[in-house]
Length: 442
Image (cartoon, rainbow, N blue to C red; front, side, top):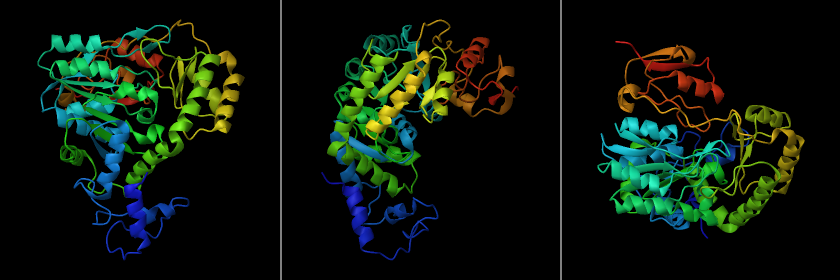
């Protein structure tokens, strides 16, 4: 299949145009060894290269191929990561001051978008999976009940897959949402590869869905897509322009074009091969697997009584996991991982075989329910002062207290910093000497 944008940029560069426009490198290279060749394709908005927020041309042709691959009607390229897409998606579906049924496990970008739009969240709960010490999936029944309890709220926003690789049943959830006249926004930042795998069926049915190509595809950092059903491409561009740069990187957009082509020309097959090895590793080591819902076949989340210790021991072997918490170590596998990398990973895990195991003793539970004093927007824009976190008990938080990764707030702006919340943060390994912003006393 073609790569419309990448091919158009190559063709124009081959004409050796006299570049009397930005960017300042003029296509002659960068003072960065290994990256200088990228300058050749780094253009600005010109008739041969197109304009992301004007539509048409090679960019929209590349976006149409992405939409088709994902089984969606429209696609907008994003060069500001899924954060940009989540902000644009909520701006499309909500009006300032609206209520929103929101997954408490949403990324902090959703909380920030809600603050900017002055949305009033009602949080959706996830059942706790005691067997693995993690929040499970969001069930269709939970969403249906929440919408029935709050009939004026018509927007639902959830995360699937989670950072740990658990997938909610989006098709079933979307049926419940649409039956009640609502719209479903899905943060699938970690699921871009699933569109080319059987598990992609669990992402269908959303009205708006955001996926980060750079997280799980062979794409450059910050690349993501906003996918939509029931919205015009013009509407996506208008919302995207609110939050995206007016000078989006053509190198990043070409990377999105190429990542889609890569998956269709062998990448999907490589993903399936990696998935087989991941399944083997899950059998050999205690791992998070399907229980209350499907799991991402390329996400390996191992269970341990000391996640941070296991992470450090792996790093000493030159193996760098994606993240760790007190009871888990998370590894992201992609089509870029060949047999050499997989064998090296398995060998490293075997050297630490005594680390893997989980009794559940002392395991985390769900974060304590928040005590809300101000709206997200009121707190985020209130006068602030800074305090060490351990001295902030009883104050109103004016920032995201979100161990990163996975970027899910334990305390959101407007919520009271309680003793239980501080104890939870200590247990997940959050830096207790870090200063945070609190709402200033009157």
